[in-house]
Image 1 (cartoon, rainbow, N blue to C red):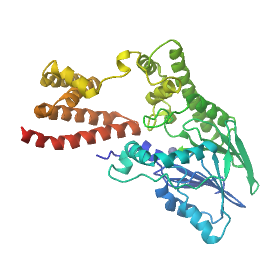
Image 2: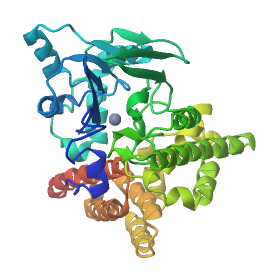
Image 3: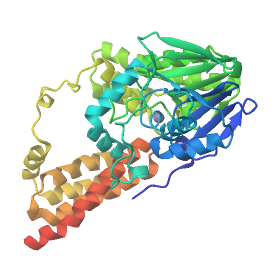
Image 4: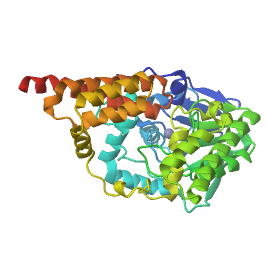
Length: 432
Ligand SMILES: [Zn+2]
């Protein structure tokens, strides 16, 4: 089941043509993430490489516009869609006998590459889930993160910045943390352009991603405010279309900063009031302001507000998040389900799940169905099959109304697992 990509999502993953701006001196090439090339009279500066699979295509597009040598490559951060498609660029440099380019990144990017060396298989596995609908589940790997083009100029520390001049154009690079701890962004005053990497994307910020490590809402807001001071004319986001016009650039930076401050400060306020996660989460859903809900740049296409609540809580809190000692070292969920099933026949639970479903209480219905799905033994194959079918139906309904690509992929993976399990069930019935 591969879901049709929405228009918003196709913008997010760069399914639109390349373009140039500032008298053809800036080249904007979308692929899964965006690559921006600044063409100076002494050579090219590339901000973010494409994902490895799009490297040749991106290289060809750039070479159809300019034939100058690549002098600098800047990694906004070390994720696989921003720092791995170097192959054709380096091959060309070797072929033509040019000097190798400087490669600029933050020291935490170097640490990230080391981390990828020990976690390669884990990242393949996790990315297959997060990107299930573009990669397909059966493909081996989205991209190997184990071969890297290592940085030659490394920004160090929290407040670091670096600047250089090429062909009369000044390049200012700043480090901030937000989506990752290795983020850097670029300001080119002569071109009035900011390249943000994933600090700005055409979606609610990817903060609190359920698969990924900690991210930083407050620092994210600060980064947006620092960028806003530059008064840029163009903003090249990590994903999505070029943002043009001083007012528009200022507006997207301001509203994103405001949203990050909001989610951070409201969760912190509730932590200080001695509240546990569940209470904080549901209160935060209640108070989410309309101005954020309605703003185009904050639509939950990829990341979403619900995830951001988790991110802020997790930034300051440990894993014991319910305040209920039962949850400290819980029993296996299958064992709990079996005990609950012992209290009544499984068909009673199924009937109740159907009732909840008919009342539109889909999430509650899922919890009841999980009692049957986790607790049933092989003797109850018929009820189990019906429970699985209803769960599949509910997941499909949720997918239809869900905007976040990450959420829909999680739901789709769940649906896929149920289909596999359903295929195995007749064999169980035959054994009875
Ligand atoms: Zn990205």
